[in-house]
Length: 386
Ligand SMILES: [Fe+2]
Image (cartoon, rainbow, N blue to C red; front, top):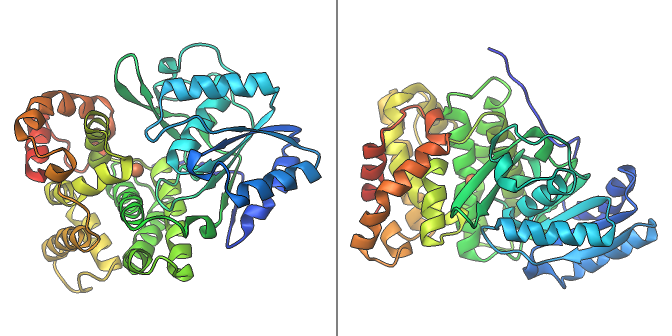
C-alpha cells in the first residue's frame, strides 16, 4: 500500500515553548501578523508577551478575536476582512480547535476567491494560504497538526469538513502550560476527543504503517494520563502528556482518517449545539461496541496496548474489555449521557434522526469505519447512545 504523511514543517513542544513564536514567524519572513485568538484569551498575559516578542523582532501584529465555538463562515469572512485591512502577510493562531480552524480558513480565503463552500470536501483548495503558526490552548483537537478545518456554512446549516494539505500549519507550538487552566468538563471532553482520534485513526480503512505507531502512542498516553489531568488539573506531567497525545492524535487521523464517531458527531453537534469534544465523547462507547466486530484484531490491539486486556486474552475478550473501559471512563469523567446533552426531549431528538443519519453518511467519514453502516443503523446507534 502507498502512504503519505503530512505534518507541520516545524513542531516544537514543552513548557514555555510559546516563547519561540516570534522566531518561527520571523523565519517565515513575516512582517505583519494577524493574531487569531480565542476570545477567552484576548487579554491573557501570555498573548501580550508574544506580541512584545513580535515587536522586538520587527513584526507588527493585529488582533482578531471575533469567533465562536463551532465557528462559521461569517467568522472566517470577518477575519479575512481583518487580514486584508491590516495588510497582514502571516497568521498566528492561539486557542482551541475553533480558533485554529478559523485561522486556517482565513489564510486560505486571503489567497483564494470564492465562497468557502467551494472548498468543502477533499483537496479542493487551489492556492496555498498565508504562512500560519498554530498554538493550541486545549489538549484535544490536534488541529495544530492537521490539514482539516470544520466550519459551519450558515446558509445551508451544514458543518463543512474541508481537507487539504494546504490547511496544514507551517509550524505548531505545543506548550502544555497553556492547557493548565482548562476546566474539568473541557479536559474530559477534549481528552476523549483526542482518544477518539487515536482509536479511529488506528481502526480506519485508511490506517497505514506510518500512522499506526503515532495512533498507539496517542492512545496509551491518554489511557495513562487523562484521569489524572481531570482529577488533578495542576498536574504538569499529566497535562504535558495529554498535550503530546492530542498532537499525535491529530497527526495520526489527518494522515489516516476519522470514522463513524466523527461522522455522527458533526450533525449532532450542529443540531443540538454540542461542542465537538462533547458530541464525540457521548458517542464513542456506543459506536465502538457497534464497530469492533468489523476489525477485532485492531480493536484488540488497542485494548492490549492500553493494558485493559492481557496479552493472551482472545480478541473478543479484549474488544469487550475496551468497550467497557470506554464506558467507565465516560462515567468516571462525568461525561453526560446524550439525553442530558439534548434537553431530554426524545420526540424532538427522534425527529432529527433521519437528517442526522444522512448528513453523517454524506460527510464521508463513516465509509472509513470497519463496519460501514446503513442510514437505518446510524439511526439505531443514535437511539442506543440516547
Ligand atoms: Fe475530533
